[in-house]
Structures are given as structure tokens and as C-alpha cells.
Image 1: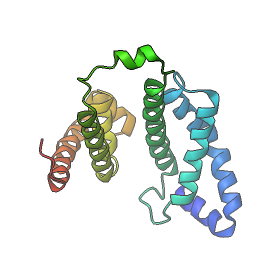
Image 2 (image 1 turned 135 degrees about the vertical axis):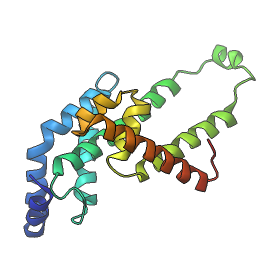
Image 3 (image 1 turned 180 degrees about the horizontal axis):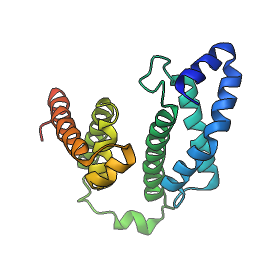
Image 4 (image 1 turned 180 degrees about the vertical axis):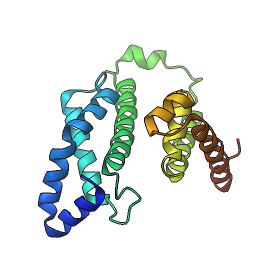
Length: 188
């Protein structure tokens, strides 16, 4: 299903468009989500994330999108980003959950830097937001290169590009990211 086909079906019947979108990409999205969060998530978390992805696609797909001929690319991007966000949320929840007791409170050290941790978290949120603003395929290239530590050749295969093109786009994307961060008052 292309974005054009989806848009045309949506104009006729939003319910049918959603059902067709779900039927076409459900297994694909489920696989992406399970590969990203399956090790740490419950089946309910995986299903909830899949549902959230389809809701995001359904409510935010722009008919003038650059994905009009590549709906799978759009679905892939939304699914990966939502799964990564869920992964971070689940990791944070798992690391913050514990049953407090008196002994725990007595062992708390005063050298905990809550303000510094908060600043780092905010900085990470801003950087991820700016990476997202780079658009595709630049945001995917940057995330794959620096978040997943993948080589240019692997990224090129993933994006169906040539490795030198990936390296050039990465260099340009990093320059643009630096500009975006500088506009926010963040220098690297």
C-alpha cells in the first residue's frame, strides 16, 4: 500500500483506510516493536506500543508527505521511533521502581547529583528532538551511526543507499545538527 492509495482510501472511508493499513502492516510493526523492546517488555507493553504506532500513523499521516510512494518507509520510521521511546520509558521505569524500606533510606548518599542528572536528561531530550528535525534519511543515519554504532556500509544497506552517500549525508547532518543545537544555546 502506498501513501497515495492510503490517502485515496481515507478520503472514501477513514475506517476502511485504518483497517487496510492495520491489516497490511500489523505483522511488520509488531516485529519492529518486538525486536526493540521484547527483551524487557511484557506482551501487554508490546501490544500497547503497536496500537500507539497505528494511532500515530492514522492521526498524523500527512497526505502531502514525502512518503506518498513509500508508506512502508513512513510506517518503519514511526514504529522505530515509538519503540525506542517505549524502550527508554520501560528502562527508566524498571530502574526507578523499588520497594522502599528504612534501610534503603539510610543508605542514600548525599553525593547524588539530581540536578546534574536532570540536566543530562533534558539535554538528551533536546538532542533527540533536533535529530528528529533533520528529517529523513538524515535522522535515521545519525541515530544508526551514533546511537546504534553501525557502520556506514550497514546503514547504506538498511536505507538502500551507497556507503559514500551515507558518509556524506552523515557529515552534513552533523553540521546541521550542530547549527540547530547552537540556536538552542548548546555548544559541542
